[in-house]
Amino acid sequence: MIEITEKEVDKFNKDRIVQQMEYQHLEKMVKIYKKRINKGIFKLTVQWETNISNMDFDKLKSKYTDIRKNILLSESQVIYLNLDKVVARNCSNPDGIFPKDNLWAAERLPNKIASLVEFIENGNLVIPPIIETNGNESLQIVDGFHRIAICRFLQLEEIPFLIENRLIQYIEDLK
Picture: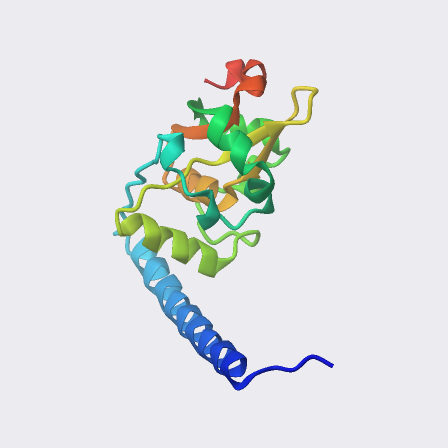
């Protein structure tokens, strides 16, 4: 039987309260952002972190970045690519997965979108989405789906992507 100390119980309870407060805050922000979009007053400028050594992959929630962090830091580069071409090569229904007219598509978690929008609005630098290939030139977005959804909604033509040097040959037609 595992003993749980009072200190551990207190920490758990405090963490839970913080999570609930964050959830409530993001729910409120979703409503605010939706109203701003409906009124046509939603403005957002994405500022990208393009210096790989400054990228804090621990802030990303993807297991991919945990596994590949050292390779991403040492053997990758940031390349600006045509967003529509990347998305079209990644999925068969780009406007269904990443619609340009609906930031709140069914595949997106509203709280994650709101959290990212707030992060961007606060002037933070955004780590570019990460793309990978499976060896037969089939492109895969492995991290950054919400970032891409926001960029498509903002109708950005080119955005930076992080890609390993060994895979550069697969993306030449996406510039």
